[in-house]
Image 1 (spheres, rainbow, N blue to C red):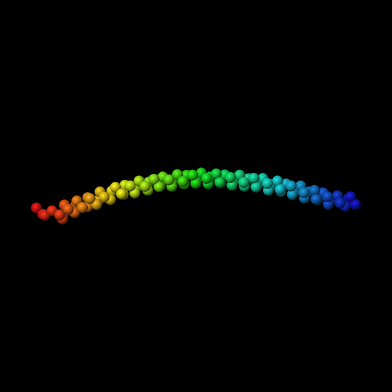
Image 2: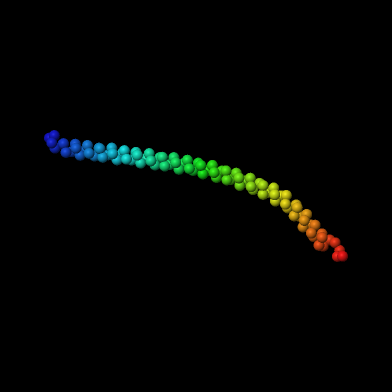
Length: 93
């Protein structure tokens, strides 16, 4: 009776060993995937920080441009008025 069960027990032992080996490989792959995900998250955080800096600088440039345009428009209006007066406001000599 033991001889009949012996091949079955060996087969069960082999299957258990194979299962343990595969489980170990799966755990190793999961650890590798987790490390990759952590790396990607770190890179994403760095990219978000850079994007935030770029957005802040763009906002500063927009504010400066608005100030410059606000200063230039009155100057242009005065110059157009002056040139119009020179062209049309004085009688011809």
